[in-house]
Length: 390
Ligand SMILES: Cc1ncc(COP(=O)(O)O)c(C=O)c1O
Image 1 (tube, rainbow, N blue to C red):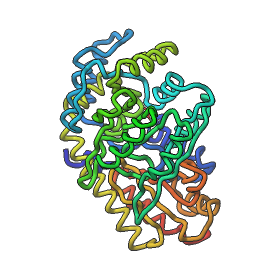
Image 2: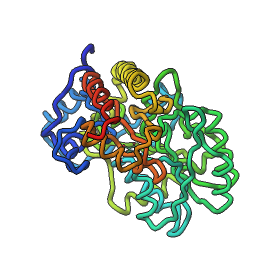
Image 3: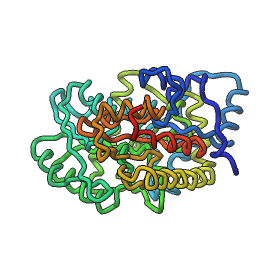
């Protein structure tokens, strides 16, 4: 498998949002190194490609649903990798995590109801709450040293004030935390006390780095009738474009409510290739993923070293999980606009601008390290130019 991750693969001209939409996204004609939207540049496991080829050769691509062997593959993966025991009936395949979250809001809350998110937050969380006419309650994470923590007092204030649902991100995009079992226990205790639905976006769960271990909220008995987990193999196995995801909802009433809402909108199973690819990844992807994680750790260390040596003012949030890193440039004193201008015009980089994750994070940047290391090294070299105005 050597070289699987280190070999750059040309994605330009493949309808890749990350590569082919980059100039438009950053309103420039310059060639940028794209390290923004959260997919990786890696080639998926051979077993995934073989499964897609085999399905292609069959030649008939009619309407499809997930059969028991698919559900067993998902269930087996979560038992093996994350110690989560699931019944097959808890698993509902669906077409994208954000879509499922959006319909969950509609299934379980009413217009005007309060929905909490922890900021900085993945951008669509703001949109799906606001676009469904619910009231967004932002609860900022607290930074201590170089890491980020939940502010339980503030969360409880919100719950006391009538929050009906929390959209939670675990591991957290963008701050790259893997929440500990103790932290999750505190959160679930609050949700149970106030009867707050817990929609847990666990799409980054497989990217566990530097010995940090992910714990699914699906394993917490005290929120059994409140919790829903949203997961997908897309981030882990470089197959986000296949739009295959799975809900894991232990409680039958909640499951029926959420899948019923998706069904009302005729949002059914993932497409045929998403299903076969996800099944192959979950059945055969362990070794590939292990290697990817080691590679991502190497990339993370490269970024940390480069910043320590060349831009020590930039604060790197402790990187525990996800292939995303959260960097604080505020000590450079550039202000949001000038920082963004320099990142694009001077450095030639396409990074995730901090303000997309919450208005107060304008001097942060999110960097996607899921790429071949030589490209990342080049990007880090370019980043040093951020000190200069042109
Ligand atoms: C936290 C999080 N949730 C969901 C998604 C997107 O999931 P999907 O493409 O399945 O809607 C992303 C992609 O960046 C993400 O980071």
